[in-house]
Each structure stands twice: as C-alpha cells, then as structure tokens.
Image (cartoon, rainbow, N blue to C red; front, side, top):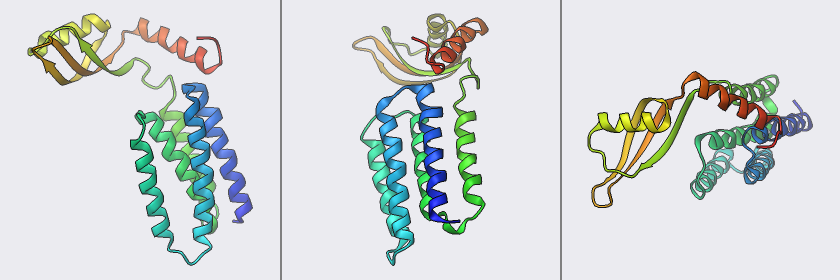
Length: 200
C-alpha cells in the first residue's frame, strides 16, 4: 500500500476521531490540538524511521517515553488517554504500514469503532465514578455507604477510602455508583443535547 494512501487514511481517521467522536462528546479544546499534533508527528517520524537506516525500534521506544512523560505532565482521565493512544496508533499505522496492505485500514476502523462504542453516552448511562470529600470522618464503612447513597441518590457498588482526617473531621472517598433510572434518563438527555451542539 502506497504511503500517500496510508497518509490519506490517517488524515481521515484522525479527523473522525477528533472532530467526529471526541469534540462532540467532551469539548476539551486543548486535547484537540494534542491529538492532531501527536498523530501527524508520529506518522511523519515513523515514516522517516521506516525508510532510513535508523533502528525503528529505538525511535518508537523514544516516542513511547515522550508520550508517557506528556501524559504525566497534565491531569488526564482514562477516556482522554484512550483517545490519545488511539491517535498515536493511527499515526503509527500510517508511518509503518507500508507492508500491511489490507490490515492497516481494518485496524484503523477497529480503533475508531472501539472509541465510538466504548465512549458512547448510551453505554452504561447509569454508572458513575467520582471522588467525594465529606465533612465528617467515617471509620464505619456501612455508615459511609449510607451517607453516600443518601447524598448521591444512588446505589453504591464500590468505594475506596483515600483519606480519613480525624483532626479536621473529613473523609475523601472514591465511589462507584449507579443512578436510579429516572436520574439516568435525565443525564442521557443532557448528554445527547451536548453531543448535538445544544447550549448547556
């Protein structure tokens, strides 16, 4: 498969990933720049490494290290990281996929499909995960669950206590919970309105 076709596939794929999937769902402008630049940069360097005497493994290893450093320099959630690695993988397919023939567009489509399905607003719409700081120190897990369920109006499935401060009387807890159907329905309507570009 020629390099020009691979680059064309990559450009179409990264535009779909960034402006068709990520932006309508998350609206984080700085990540749009990151995804586009990372994708094109990786594709360009990978194509140079593939056509030169430089060890491609060494070059890709350096890119991996730089990517990890970049991810550690800002607070990103797992969804942003998934899109980030999707953009990197698409760039690698374009830069190193000259001998992959039909596999390159298939893997490109697989990445886009995984992001479309895995990050779809209607996939598990009632489940949430967040860190909550409570104005009381809880050492009894049953009492903590009861307080969280009353506060969140939800069913708590799992919690992890991050900090109990007995001096300042606070508790920091990461909680995974499930909204009741009525609350989830309202949240889903809001998510659809947001993805369609309606005012928030």
